[in-house]
Length: 327
Length: 282
Image (tube, rainbow over all chains, first blue to last red; front, side, top):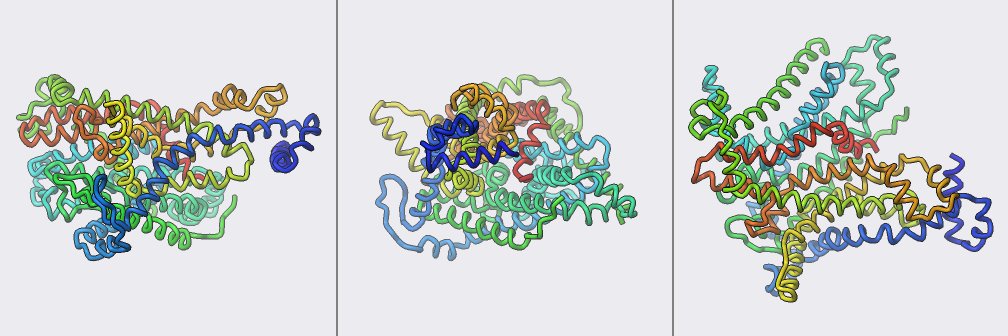
């Protein structure tokens, strides 16, 4: 601890009075080190910062600017139209459907995933082969969504494995055209839940793993059931991890593109009733059968997504704020 | 309630995990079947494994070219990401400079910004770069554009992960080395980098996995089929399937896409899971 304080103190002191420090450097061993580090600070940080600014943050700001323009991309004259693109989003039923779909994924899948993840993580701890089960639950999350979409395409085909299986065991009433237009969005919701739950199980387990064992031993001595242990020990003590997991879900769910695209994008454009905001943006800019190259409009969608994420994250941080439980 | 719930949840978890395994086994078997078998006997093992499915996916459908493109793009981008992120993360945690805190936050903000926010300007920018180079040298390769964007989009998480990692390393060794007269760059290269190796590998693997699966940016930036990444090639194969009905070949394509990731996962699953949950523990 002492050395750490000395290092920090040396750093600030050196910034103000380098000469003074130099004359004392023999006695202050970490000041030489922090001076070395300071000299290299910008050479070490600048390359990443430049790439990040030029190819990530800069374009994001440019996107904000372009969202106020009418523009069809390079070669077209940019025209400032104020908030008209946003007005158009509001009046565009196709965008509203896409926006609604994104919110449905966020809320419906979100509730299902967290209920499942809570249940599973509460009991998985005491199960045999816990690590293996956890690893296999998580596996779909890191597999290419395109590959999963293609695989599920045949699995859910009207004559695919699922339906022939259901017919085979005499449950043909349950067999459905899973990928038919009025059924496919529900199928996608279930698919998203299936793919994502393992990741959130893992997050919640990682949070619970940090809780010292004696809390559970105490609870057991007091006669708490497993569910009560979860309610009165696990839940409050891993609350901060749960809050982070919820924020991650907001961010991850709103950018779902590949999974839906693989299900629907191969036979022309994905139908309107399954589009999410990223898919609609893709179709309105450079993607699909006949790209619309409506760049200003597409940028407005990107801005709306960021705004939505910011609002939801701020809102959730407020709602989920608790007095920190320290242990 | 816990008494009745427990066996239910246990059974449910087992059912879920077994279905996951069976789904992958089914994909593997389907990839070795003839098209007739795929629908005719969906539950049976392939009569005799049809390895030509893989041959056709690999060479006729250009999954091989896609595999090569993906390996080159993903490796280049991931290595560059770590090379840029490691010194940055080290300085952000250790320099004690006034800008370090705000810069750490600034990089972390990138994890919350979806690529949809910057995808259109990036597309325009890359179009401009490609045109400029084509005019000046008569040559440009969109795979370079894609790799560069991959680096930019991977940096926030890599820096975040590595700053958390560098924070856990002891400061005493550095101080001792400084006392022995080692310079800052030498301390970083010869002492800190070897110490940080587990963190660097985790960051590298996680970057590789996410880039291997990335499709949206590739769809936007790469138009030449010769330059398609692996997921793009698989989508292309899926599209032609509508005419050829070569299901076995398509599933061979699926296996070609997922097998490398599954192999890495079997090898390093603990590290991958720990790395991906690191963000939530802070």
